[in-house]
Length: 294
Image (cartoon, rainbow, N blue to C red; front, side, top):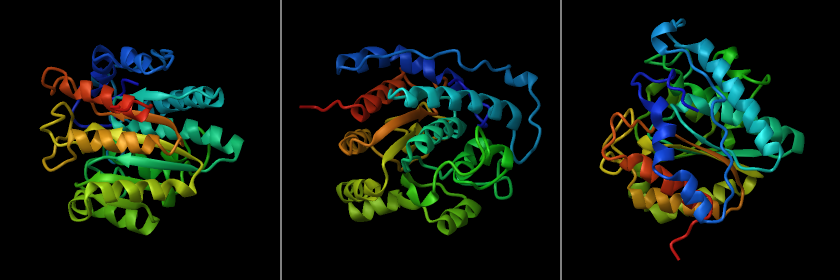
């Protein structure tokens, strides 16, 4: 899903290609999966030829159009019992991923939980956003907060109950979104929580959190990692997760047997060093889908 209309720094539209070049197909097939490629589901006009429109929700129309297309694809894939692994692109694509999964979950009467591994909250609305970038509003919209064009994307209403959202690795939250997150009842494990409690303790709490849901969507933003391990991302911030912590988290959440869809976003090869961020993305996907060291 090579969409980068939701962010300020461009280049994440090349993320899927970088991840494919890093060997995602070969890696997943080596651990026993059969892969099917769903490319070209989204055709973007060059951003230079699109107008930003609403300054508090830039490029709203093309993002809504793209995410509706993605939602339809994800609904088809999950309805058939397959696993959609969506390669971004910026984090605004979670609007489509969650809408498609939610449509299937409604039919099967299952409850969705979301593991959101990200340095940021993405829980602003058009009223609180400091940037107007939709990748900072996407999760709030999926939880039913914000512009109706986003909250009602694909089908009307909330896609996930915020009380079933768990953040890991947060370390850069805007004042407005922080207030909304607290009011909405999401669960947050910041980098400070990890430092205080230890990563093993946080991982066990995360697994316990998801006992109350039927299925899990994992939304992994590569900027949750320290730039030492993942330099190729749009908003690199020091003090993030190590590669070992992130790999362990994916391996452990896989043991719940509840993960039914995932996306990996914000790989920006323009900013990367020898494609190391994309290579790490491949290894994270493999751990999430069953790879173990021994």
